[in-house]
Amino acid sequence: MVIDTPTFQRDDFLNTYFQRTSLLEQLIVIILSRSQKPLNRGRVSKELAALKISFPVDEIEAALQTLVTMRQIISHSQSGYQCAISGFTTVLGSSTLADDKLEELVAAHRRQKRRG
Image 1 (cartoon, rainbow, N blue to C red):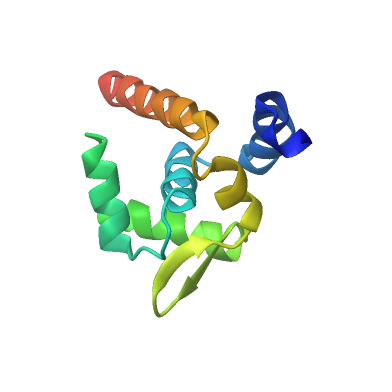
Image 2 (image 1 turned 30 degrees about the vertical axis):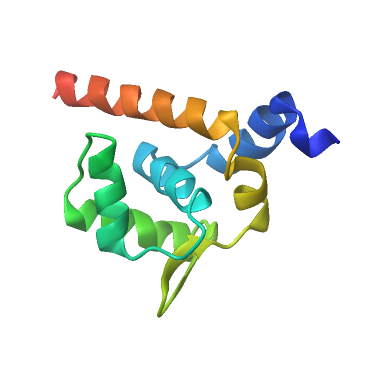
């Protein structure tokens, strides 16, 4: 199946959606895609902390709102935030692509922090 092909997942799916997203937005989408249930902002922050990275709460909130309103990649309800595009949970939920991309994003964040 094409959807199971790593090249499709990376080049045709993920890169299409991530073209204009920030590093934090990408991290959030991957975190949400791996969750079986909606997450609130505090839980997203804890998931980032589990990766040994942190962002100010206002930056997390701004990224979440951008993903909901401008990018329409995630949705927000009383239960929390979740992927609005079912393909994210299907393609990324348990794929090695998600693991690889997460590792790349964490490394990029650490490089940015070192540069100041």
